[in-house]
Length: 330
Image 1 (cartoon, rainbow, N blue to C red):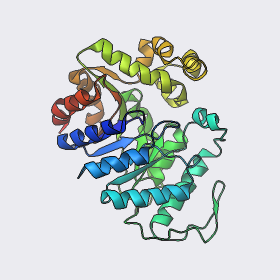
Image 2 (image 1 turned 180 degrees about the vertical axis):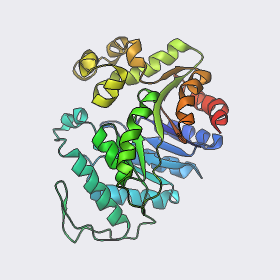
Image 3 (image 1 turned 90 degrees about the vertical axis):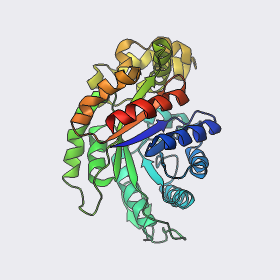
Image 4 (image 1 turned 60 degrees about the vertical axis):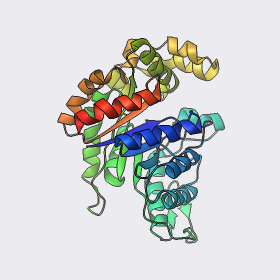
C-alpha cells in the first residue's frame, strides 16, 4: 500500500516544507502540489520541499501544455529530478477551460495535446530528438535537450473524463483520477482498464492513486467549512462523469461559480454549498475516513492519496492520517 498527500498552491511556502517533512516522518510515499493559475509556483514550492526532505517523492498536480510549453516542461522535469535525486513525478493534464479563459487561451484538442505532450517529453528526457508533426505539436529535428536528463521522469496524467482516463491507462506511468466522491473509483476503473488493453508492455504497471478530498477534525463544523471552501472554488470545473456520480448538474454549481468568479465573494459561495455537494469528499474523523475507503481497498486500491483541504488545521490532519489512517491500511 502506498500513500500520498496533495495540496493546492495557495499556502505559504514555509508550510509546504513543514508538511512535507512531517509526511516523510509518517512514511508517506509522495507529496504533490497543484499549479493553478495566479497562485504560487509549484516548481518553486517543490524545489524547497526537495531540499528539505530525503526520501519522499514530489510531484506536480498538474502542469498543462497550454500555459507552459512542453519543451519547458521537459526541462523542468529533468532539472527537478537532478535536484531531488530522481524523486520527481511529472503530473500533467489538459487543465480546466474555465481557468484558461482568464488569460484568453483556447482549450484546443485536449486529448491530442496530452498524447503528443507525453510522447514528446519522454523522447526529450530519453535524449532523443522529439520531431513531431501532430495535431497539437509540430516540432523540427532541432527539438532535443542540450543536457543529459537523469532519467525518463515518471509521468502521471490528471484525468476526469472517459477519453482522458482511457489515455492514462494506455500511455501514462500513473493516473491522478479525482474520485469525487471516493466511490467514483468504481466509475473510472473501467475506462482505465480499457486503456490498459492498448498499453505497451515496456511501460511499468499503472499507478492509480485514489485521489480524494478529505477534511479531518474533531470539530465537524470546522471540518465542513474547510471542505466547503474547496467545493465552492473548484466545483464548477468537475467533469460530467463526476457530476453524474454525484447526481448533480453544472447548473447546480452556477450560483457558486458566479459568487467566486464574478463577485469575488468566496464566503458567499461557501454558504451555497449543500450536503449533496459535500459528498465530493469526506468530512469527519479518521474512523469516518477509514469507513469510506475500506471498500476501495477491498476492491484492490493500493495507493491512497489524500487531498485538500486535509482539515481546518492541515498539520494536525497530517498527524491524524499518519497516526491512525496509514497504520490501519498498512
